[in-house]
Amino acid sequence: MRAMWKGSVSFGLVSIPIQLYAATENKNVSLRQVHEADGGRIQYKRFCTIDGEEVPYAEIAKGYELPDGEMVVITDAEMAELPLPTQRTIDVLEFVPLESIDPIQYDRTYYLEPQKNAVKPYVVLRDALHKSSQVAIAKVAVRQRESMAVLRVHADVLVMTTMLWPDEVREPDFPFLRDDPPQIRPQELSMAGSLIDSLAEPVFEPDKYRDHYREALEQMIEAKVAGEETTKPAAVTAKADVVDLMAALQASVDAAKKSRDAKSSSEESDEDAKPPAKKKAAPRKRAPKSA
Image 1 (cartoon, rainbow, N blue to C red):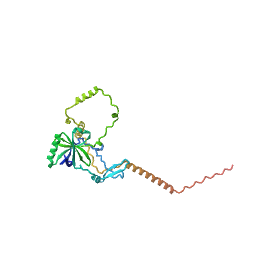
Image 2 (cartoon, helix red, strand yellow):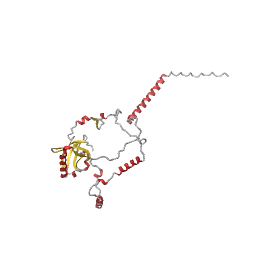
Image 3 (cartoon, helix red, strand yellow):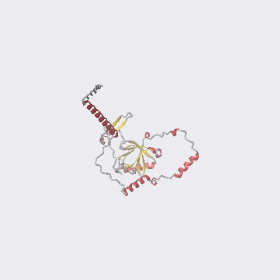
Image 4 (cartoon, rainbow, N blue to C red):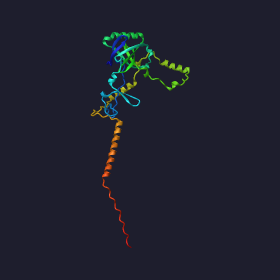
């Protein structure tokens, strides 16, 4: 594993230097978007919707859109100036029972490894925390975002799980909650309880469950490789320009209009350049034949 963050755990007057590692990883099979006909990769570019030009990373800023469509542009330099006291510190605030935290608030989990000169205070905090049967509530900033976090012990390692702020958890506001509750018969409740008891286990053992979809997808890929059902995309000779659909349509409309106006103007010029048409002489009347 590679450390993604370095800082310290602030525990009263004690500061324990640590390194942070992501405790989980996504095991989904990674699939790319490709052209079905030849296997070529589908690529995307970042471009400005106003001028249609591709924008390099160095010129990309953050923006907050107002309700009227106006945009507040915020640069990386301005973001760096914002006060973030917990940027390199996991600041322990209090200790509470783990059962008092609703799992709906949990976000992401990380392992904490002590740096070489901090193993002893790390182990002291770990063992004291484990003995207390409580968890530590802390504040921390990871990736320019301050979060609440819970520190606990798992497999002899301190584990930090960031938590959502209270106003980030939605209220379950559903119509049925405001209606009169349905009448539940004691027999129905007893039957539901019997079903729960029949499926109950003393502990949760996640290793007995498997991702059958992922296994089937991996087997399908292996079968295609074994049967040489693969496609080698041709070498890309030139980068295809990504064109905004609305811009392309507008340009087409403008070009068609310009062409139509030019044609109309040309026809008018041709009409002006023609000599005036001669009037045809009226046909002579023949004299009546003499009898």
